[in-house]
Image: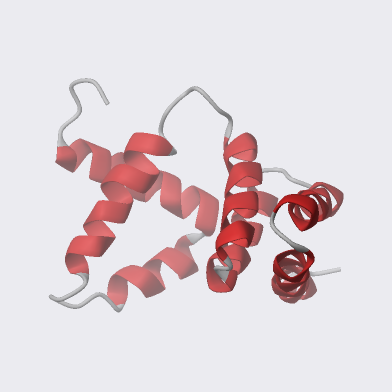
Length: 129
């Protein structure tokens, strides 16, 4: 993290979050924030997207591969959908996304992988031909 302030991390994180997940997704999350959950939006921008996604140790493509595996293991299908969109923006192919889910079938269980395939299929159906 170095000398970056929370404000700088938040700004960097918001930029990266928009680049990966898209403006529409991020705007919906931010615009629906309330006084109750606004601190979570700030935490996500600062630490998830700024401090971690902003690091140089892995490419965004590599981070997407990892996230798809982790989210499958956790069974977080709405997040799988969001991160499939991000993975496509980060340059992953449909075949690479499929390979992640096949890998997770072995280590996380077939039902988890099937759920992620279903979530990804919804996203892939949105793509223009």
